[in-house]
Amino acid sequence: MAVLIIFGTVQFFEYYRDRTAAADIGKSVKIKITQKDTTSTVAKTLHDKGLIRNEWAFELEVRARSGEVIPGTYTLQIGMPVTDIADFVTGKSTPTPKKAQKNDSDVATIDITVREGWRTEQIADELVKQGWKGKPEDFMNAVENVDTSKYSFLADRKNSVNPKSLEGYLFPDTYTIAENAPAEDLIQLMLQNFDQKFNEGMRQRAQEMNLSVYDVLIFASLIEREAQVNNERPTIADVYLNRYVQGIKFDADPTVQYALGTEKNWWPVPTGSDLESTDSPYNTYKNAGLPPGPICNPGLASINAVLQPGGTSYLYFVAKNDGSGEHAFAETYDEQLANQDKYLNGGNGSGTDQSTTDQGTGDQPPADAPTDTEVPIEQTGG
Image: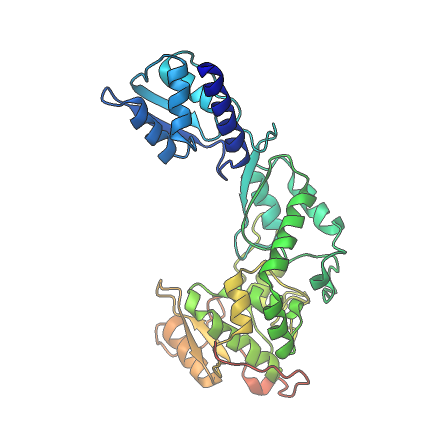
């Protein structure tokens, strides 16, 4: 009877453990048992390292074997059954740890991290590097063909270059998927996540600014590729929103990088001639207004910066190039030239350095662009 009770109790905890498995299930963990350790101290160590969920269940298993924990160093896996762990540390057997399982499935899972500022092709490449069993082209094909009919936020998508593009909507985050999951499954997770994160309040705010969700993502993607210091995001948003209102070309280097990107280098550093000569609707040095679509998948901080900009009148910025990641901002073209001279040319008075891409937004004075607009954007401090 005692054995049956012990067995039943352990099975209950095994059932409970399988359904509340940790997100990092399958991860290898080393523990060291010394001569001073007891079953109780080992149970606590196992619990603290996430290898078991109930110390009492482990102690019952050891007692059921009439065994003692044996000093040594053991490599265990999160998700191993308590019975296997007890066998291992009492010397009853030296089993090869069972493949960690999740929800009683034999399919291994992996964590996929999608970082802010990646373009869709980068995501496809990185998935494979992180352990997904598909191919980059599988992911890209799925992006083109996945069923998006249930996502109302895609209704205002208007990319004239690629109407099926999901650039901007593949929300950066960490996702747990089966290592051999279809690409469509991961894309659906990203879109669902975007739908939750870009909430109703944010959509209402976009409407107040006379911007569509798609417009917000375009601005946010520019900010994501420009900002290196988090607290500068709202100010960089000011620059692009102010330029949009005043009809000034964006002159944004990252849009040219997007146009020039290839599998060998998705974000090449453009030369000064590239900025002017690259023939692409994404080249904001040649084309006024918003580019056809987002140039990357921005994170929540950049999206919020668009919706709650800094409220400044800045039209220009240039990287300080001092290792801080910060920019110098300017309201007038003369101020911008002075900043370029200071930070790009060492104050030698040579003006704009077209050989670098750190000059920021605004290589042409506002007088060279139209100043009227039919799209008012209300900006408030944020």
